[in-house]
Length: 293
Length: 280
Image 1 (cartoon, rainbow over the protein chains, first blue to last red):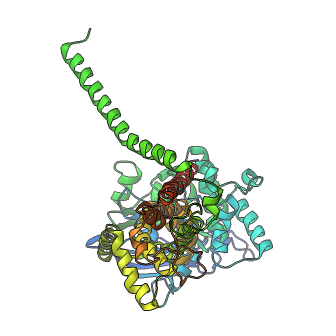
Image 2: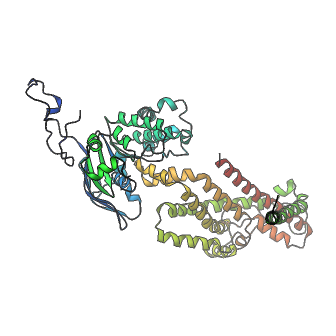
Image 3: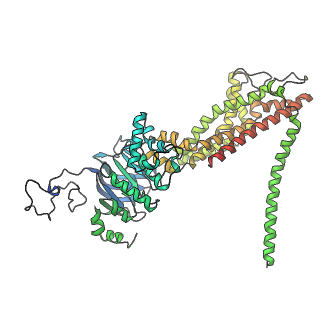
């Protein structure tokens, strides 16, 4: 399914080349293997150009240029304080909430400048959802109300539509069977893993195109983590997922591409397998083999 | 086997505990004594007439403080309607929208206003409402009480809103909900019990205020029919009856004081009930 990626990970605009290992001559001409067929260029979810983010005088992100493909899972890894969360939050304009935050550089989401003049941050965030490290269902709302809050507070009233979305979102979050009998219980009455899946259902209910996840499993036990990772797998087809994690094994499990950040810089970015098995940069190698981090 | 130091330490410890218990008793005793005395002096005068009849002319026995009881409730309602929205919006501004520099000044101003003697608010009400309207009125009384409530409600609202975790606001923003809707539907809703507690406490504070009402509501021996008329209130009525030379009126003043303290007690009790339910 994934087109073969060239060895220039930074630029997705290179024409897709056929895998040099596959011998074309032995193949029947009428049915070329999918890998060598000139596939349509992969849609870019985020085109980040020379991004620098400052909190006051401190520079958190230094000249990052990266292109994140749509319809797949991209992981951002790196030691604590390397700027992964900052980079992630800049993708849906959440870093602006910190006083003193400013940036230079461009972020294009599917071709549109996220920070262009006249762009409403609220509309950006409807298209780019976010899951946080600590699950935060609203305490005064029931499970059903939690899931639908994004729709209701944006003016959607049609009951049948809301009910349908409710069930769809909870099913996508693999939570429907567990909560369908008590949708009116308060959202905070669930276990940690269920609460995080509730937050995912809540984010999915507004049907964003892209989902950002900031260490979604760091507060969860292994079983809940496995459920969330399964969920991420199932979302892959329709959504673009960018996940920040400091658990390298998790990055290896869920993502197709991985970016390694260190001290605010993007050190290396490429297919997950390559980053972990065959990293090119010595710092990447040191991190993934556990020598620091 | 206790060493000499251990014995000394235990003795010091019991001394401190004893001192703390003594202080607690010192605080509660006057409270209990006042209440018991009020009960003793006022209970006998509390009867159905007292709660339903208007005051009789000086010198005559009988009658009641019905208009004063109703008047106090009416004035509290007026103060609520006039003061709570302003205090609430101010608290929301400080917590959700303000800038750090300006916030410091606003808080300072509110704290100063909280310490203003209530008689000054009465004068403000006189200047702003009584003089222009040409007469004492319930509206002026409500306004003076509202001035007392505003800084109180503002500070308690701000404190309660700051207690709402930022993660809820972030979650709301990440869903693409406009900021004002997050403030109203999520933040305010989460903090609602705390805000109500603050409002009830402010109401308890103004229930017994006398000085601001003397220049604004004036008091009255009649039922109040319009916001532009003077209105009776329990504290005013108690004051006039207590200093009066007529024994019957003095007797009724005790009963009035009892009713007033029961009212404040009920307000405080409802605050505790609300706080207790929040912990569930």
